Amino acid sequence: MGSDFTDKVLVERYKDPRLGEMVLTRRGEHYEIIFNGVFLMATYGGESEREMVRLALREISRRGRKKGIQLLIGGLGMGFSLQEALKSRAVERVVVVEVAPPVIKWNRCYFGGFNDNALSDGRTELVLDDLYLYLKRATPENYDGIILDIDNGPDWLVLASNQRLYTGAGLSRVRDLLRPGGCFVLWSLTKNAAFREELSRLFSTFRVERVDDAYLYLACK
Image 1 (cartoon, rainbow, N blue to C red):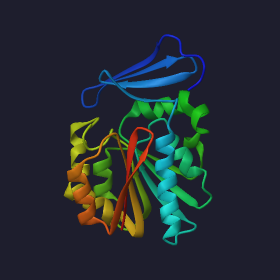
Image 2: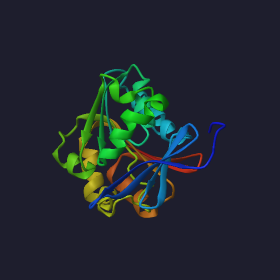
Image 3: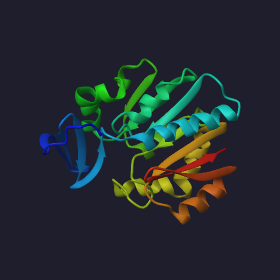
Image 4: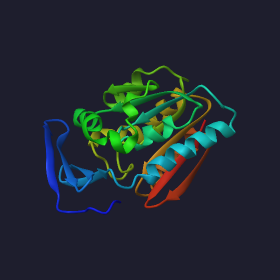
């Protein structure tokens, strides 16, 4: 986590009538994002986010895709998922969809030293959009992997409108955007029986892995 964890210092505050309030604070060398009064993410940690990407890439490779991999990441966060994806030479392109303008700004201004300036990599394509709306417009069978980390899971939503991503219609769209053999991974703080049932109905295989304090749902087409 780093050795200097002094009192929090307010760095920036962002208010939006649709998204609510996002606050960026600093503790020593690290940053934290507070969303509507609730801790959301920080520059310390991030291992489960990285493992989520490693899990997807291992499974994609196991299914025969060794190069030219196209990924879609829902949620920029601190940039750790994107950073991990770009470590792989097999990855050709990563589309990152982020709904909150300050998260993009703060990545460029403050988080680059924590994520190897992942937004500056030529393979990164950054999109400012609502993920559900982006998925509706995206081209079918265009991705080898879709990695989703925009909430704390189906039970703990950052935005109420994100609920549609975890139901039949939303997950069906995710499946349709995957190439044959493609994989979908979701980061969640909790287990959700209804979500597991949807995955088992829509995908050929799925499993859940525990990493640190998170559950990683992996489903493959």
